Image (cartoon, rainbow, N blue to C red; front, side, top):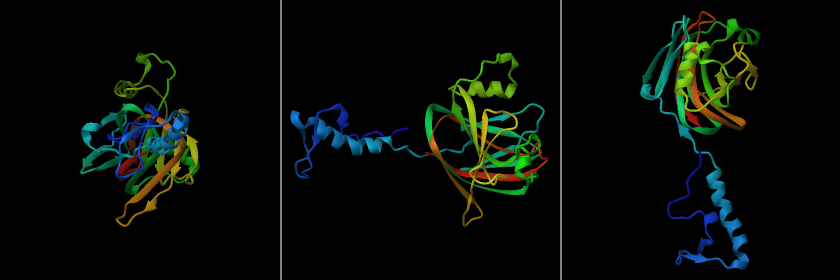
Length: 250
């Protein structure tokens, strides 16, 4: 997303005019031909710098903005929305919240606040990499733009059909940001269920009110078509409650 130019200023790469620096005479005047290109470059630079800055967006955590997707034969996680907070009640369960974007967004930074209590039964990074240990207090998933391998619709599981019908753009990859993982912060590993899913261990900073804050910046912007929010304990027979608030993409 890009910041738009102020309404009172015409973007300088569309015209041969600039605004006079004299505060008492702010009227548009033509630039002489000899200095036109130089002035354009000098005037465009700050404007382009402003326009190139990503715009932070706080994700509205309200029930009617998300689709709660269930897996067949797995008890779904109970999800509750309350005044800008999402609570996940996990009891040997798994399901996820899906948010489809109206446009493909270049996401370079993700921040959020979270907390959890209860028991998550995984004890090592090796276990976390296995199917038996593939659960998390919380997963913030970025659904990445791309063309998936062609698979007949009839062969897709119900939940995957639901995802494809909900997303407005194709996706062939996902990145999970996982706080308080067994892997060291910054570690990346592949999901034991799909090589198209990357897991990233992200560090948390404690806050004053028993919440923790995560702020993670990618090396390059990720072309993102939606978000996948999840807390699960079906593989590890875990019972816990986690909460999410102040989710911001940048």
